Length: 576
Image (tube, rainbow, N blue to C red):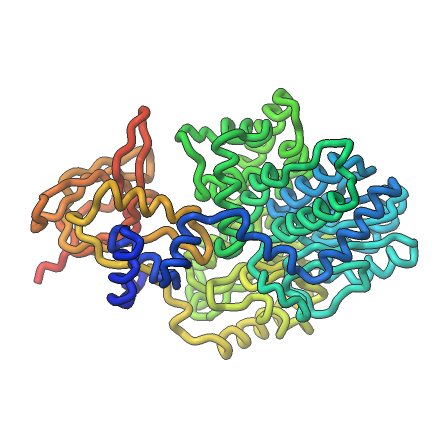
């Protein structure tokens, strides 16, 4: 689908005031204003974030109650079970809580459910088969548990306390000892943007504070929570939560830690990915590290990823990283087969794409990759997507949405046609009986069609401003790099240049292109190297372009760095 170019028009007075007071490039000021950063104070905090800015995490409801109960469990040497989720958010949350409690001398273990055999969340059978079998007195959930009412009730009957840390939407509080979830109605922290690992990190901050006040660390080394920010950053970026406020501070800190001293598992994973550039960026976490960690749970078991992130043994780390890298290759192959099959089906039945939602089911699809396939389809066709596959006599589904379309709210409105569901605005998991698929499809389509305006279903390219090649400089490239990490709600700036000439073009590999671009009418008449990814190699490249949308980045190669334009979209110059 052809994208609509939305070129921002920031208030010129605000931009002028900001770049004069900050002494920055006018384009940098325009980007900041586009992101709602309009004052010198806000901009200074944004450009130089500090860990002091995350003390707001202490405001989470039930945080102190949860911390006191865990401290009691540590002191009494109770068996503590951490129950996590199988995605990167849950994996990293499990890892940081496990390592903290182990460091504090707790009798602690963890359990990550098998994605297909056990499914998402804490269930009654986990109480009897796992917690009671292990004689656990306390269960701590991470990145799950908000909807586990039956399991929490069973744990209570068995004399086991449950502490829930989660960030998923929550309607009714389960009867747990504490429920730390910024989305509960009575939590006034304003931290709804936290990932599950961010909520778990907040709990560790409170727990360390409480243990410190008890004098617990007088005879032992106090845990350095800053060192855990690498995994908090990884889980936060992977879960595509807004990279604003506390999330941005922790992610930036975590990436700095990764670039200074990688833990053995991450070192091995970076090597397995083939990353050779000098500095990791949020993009590497999202598109290279996270998919490999996710592949463990999708294709085998997420426990492999937790072991990789927590091991101190470099040989074991290398072996585990190689294994998850192999699983990721398997995942890519399975995903590609399902995607091809769906594309063929849509070509044969184009009327399906006239609907506002895409709901498909197939008995043979692999449940572990449905979420990724749904994401790709949602992005390509610009509509929410729900994919179901057969699982144990019922149908398990994964759903993905678009910005502005609340998936959780829409599915909730159709829940009478489901056995169960859970998730948040952009992603959800569902379970339905065979007889419910068609009724859910119709109800979901009706709900989406009635609730959202047509403009949300048109793909848009958000552009920060028009940027002539004469305004591009090393100083601007440095300032834009200082806006990182980029991600949800803090997108990497995209610019547009008009009347651009292609001086040179060459295919790289199978689907990438290297170019040299210039603006013939510019005063400096400079040419810039550019790259465009995932192109059709058979499509000819016009020499004259009407507009080019691009990102401005540093390209590091052989110890040198050069400005490079990463081309997003091009429009051929009109003959008229």
